[in-house]
Length: 114
Ligand SMILES: [Zn+2]
Image (cartoon, rainbow, N blue to C red):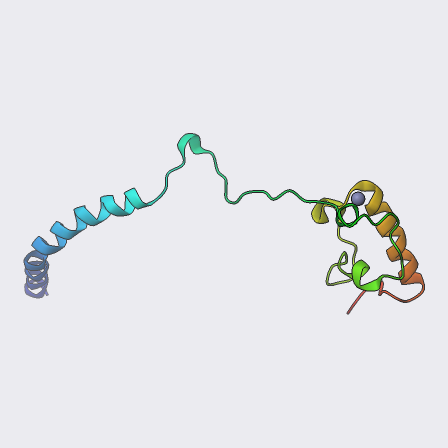
């Protein structure tokens, strides 16, 4: 057992010169490639400014009959997505909520989708 171990160590020792020569040169390059942030500030991705779609398209009042539009503001389960997420302004989010509730009542939109 010990003889085999010595053989192994010998083998590694013989392989070592090239490995040790490669290892120190490889380690600093990988460290250098990694971008290091100064002051430890993290910015994973740039924030994009959200714009209210109704304001952008100059839609005054949200219509409960525009089902494809209303549907785009619903989650997969049929829940309303918050204005914080979609970027809707408060006024249009209120109108949207009302429109979606009306559409649901007329069974144009689902309350839930399962
Ligand atoms: Zn708006």
